[in-house]
Length: 132
Image (tube, rainbow, N blue to C red; front, side, top):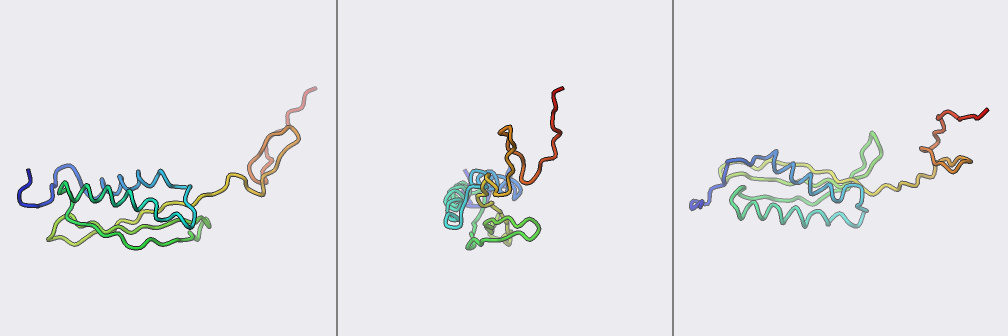
């Protein structure tokens, strides 16, 4: 047992924590709407509290999340900034986690063909099969 209240170092580093937070985020990626940004926070807090109780990290802080629009794609997401301090004598490190918004599969530009097939938006580049 760790009697000195010092974090355990073996087997867990910042990359492991970020990976776990990303795995938690996968449950919500593409499903969130503007009013549901708080949902992943509950799981983040539970996971990070477990790490503090088990003395794997010293402390953490989750900054208020922000809604962002990514310039290149126009996609919207929530960005969560989580500061993790591994030990009391070290400064905290910031992790940025992005969780995407819900995007409808029914794009208004979808083209339906006479045979009932649905193609990608405005994309009818498949070869027509003609039977002689």
